[in-house]
Image (cartoon, rainbow, N blue to C red; front, side):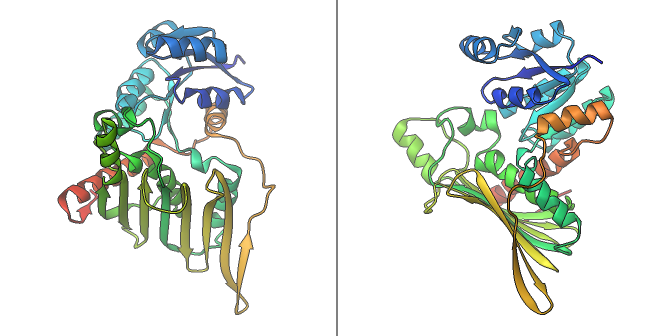
Length: 347
């Protein structure tokens, strides 16, 4: 069997996708596309030694026979490039957020169904050894029924590419909610079993980002913080918070906390960085116990490896387009609730 041929669109963050696919022995990254000729030369040819480099995704899809395409571009281009790759006969791994809004996400899912190809979203925070270990514990019933959660990602000052596409709503669709919040939201929803959302009450803010943008004469027309409460049809509640600029002690603060009828859990970052710890809190024989997850835990593969392996074996993949759509429906409702100052029903 020949190796699966992979194409990457976008080399800004596409390097992580290249490295991820290269971990699978049956995958080969044979082509990349990026509209920046300097980046294409420096990263595509020199850094990653990709044999076929193109200045447009359209040219790459026309000239290459690819099995999988990764879409790693500004959010505005996720839908058109995903649909183009699906029409070209490729399975697609799309970066988060899935799209600019829920309607675009629906269009992408419809295109995948029509093409009879797979569509997966790179919700990378669930593809770690620790996250898999937590998921196994939750699925085994340790927490009982989860009824409340709070999931956050705050930065003291961490506006990405200030003045670039991240802070431009026409290209990004939103600020830290759609950049950072989607990661922590997906992790919580995945652990909760992706319950069906009912309505949202939310607000967004832009106090610090707008001031810095004005001082530096930069474009910044998205929120710098968002906070939301999501109520689900089966009664659960999830609070979501995300910020690029907030007056907190930590430079980077990430935490997902879930409360269940039998136990609770928390996953939090350590040292304001990207290392995490996980603890469970439970009652046994009338006593309160803390149970901490210690490394090493069973090895787990990243999103790119998982996607390739799922296609080869014919098994379902996780982080589906349908889950991506649920996240987009919630995000749409959060922005609508903030704009209108009222709870918003999710249809």
